[in-house]
Image (cartoon, rainbow, N blue to C red; front, side, top):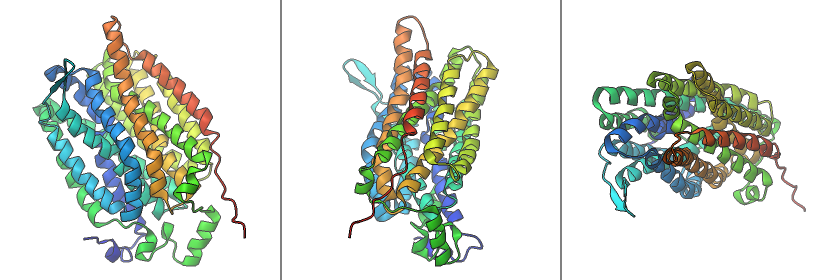
Length: 435
C-alpha cells in the first residue's frame, strides 16, 4: 500500500519534504553497514575470534565488489519500478543481514587459511545494500523532486547519513561494552526495521508529477516551466550520457574519493590506538568525523547551487587530500580530533556533490540508469579502499613495523590527483537535432 497519492496534495507543506524525510530514513539506517560502524567491531572480533584486520575489512571489500556488479541493475530498477520498491526491499534485507551477524562466526579452510564465510556473506550483503540500492534510490528520488533546491536537499540527505554515522557506532559501542558484540549486531538490525521500513514502503512517490505536483513545490505548471528553464534542466538518455567525457570523469573522480574515504574511516579507530591514543579519543574522533560530515553536507550543498559542481568537487577533493596528509602526522589527541573534523567536512561534500552533478548535468529522465552505470566506480573504490590499509598494516607488521602511514600518504596523493582531473568535467551540451 502506498499512501503518497492520497497524502501528496493534503499536507500543509510541499510533499517533497516527506520524500526527503523518508529517503533520509533509509540513508540513516544504512549505517548499520558503514565503515565507521564496523570499525568499532574490529577490536572485539579480532580479540575473541582471532581474525586479522585484513580479514575483517575483507568482508566490506567483498560487499563493495559485489555492489559493483549490482549497481547497473539497481539503476534500471529505480527507473522502471521506482525508488519505493527498491528502498523497501533494501531495508528488509539490511535488517536481516545485520541481525544474522550475531551468529555469523563459522569458518571454512581455504589453502590452509580459516575464512569466515558466514561473516563475509552477512556483512557483504549489508555492504551491497549500503553501497548500491539505498545510495542510488534515495539520492535519485530526492533529485527528482527538487531542481532549484537540489544542492541543499542532497546536503540534508548527507546530514541524515552523518547522524547515523554518529549514532550507530555509538550505540554499537555501548551495547558491546554492556553485553557483547553479538547483542550489538542484533540491536542495530532491529533499529533498521523500526526506523525506516514504514516510511520507505508507504510514503514515497517516484516523481512529483506522478501525484499531480511540480518540483520544488512550484504552484503552477508555468512556474515550474520557468524554474526548469532558469536551471536549463537537460534530458539525456543513458546512451547519450555515456558518450560524454564528463560522465566518466565524474565517475572516476567519485570512485577515487570513496576509495580514500573507505580506507581512512574503516581503519581510523585502530590507527589512533596504534598511535598511542586512548579508546575514548578514537571514539570522539570518529564522532567528530561524522558530525562534520553533516555540517559539510549542508555547506557544500548550498555552495553547489551557485557554483559549477566540478569546481566544488575539486575543492572537496583538496580538503580530503589535506585531511589524509595530516593524518600521517597525528600523535596527540588534539591533532586526531582536528584532522578527523577536517576530513569529515570533506566527506560531506563527497556525499553531496556527485548526486547533484549527475542530476544537473544529465537531468531527471534517466537519472536512475545513469547513476547505476556510474555507481560501480564508487563501490569498487570503497572495496579497494577498505582493504588496502589492512594489507599494508599486516605486511608491515610481519616486517616488524606496525604502521598505516604509507596507506594514508597514498590517499593524500590520490586526493590531489582527483582535484586535478575533476576540473576537466565540463558540463556537456546536447547538440541540436538536425532537421
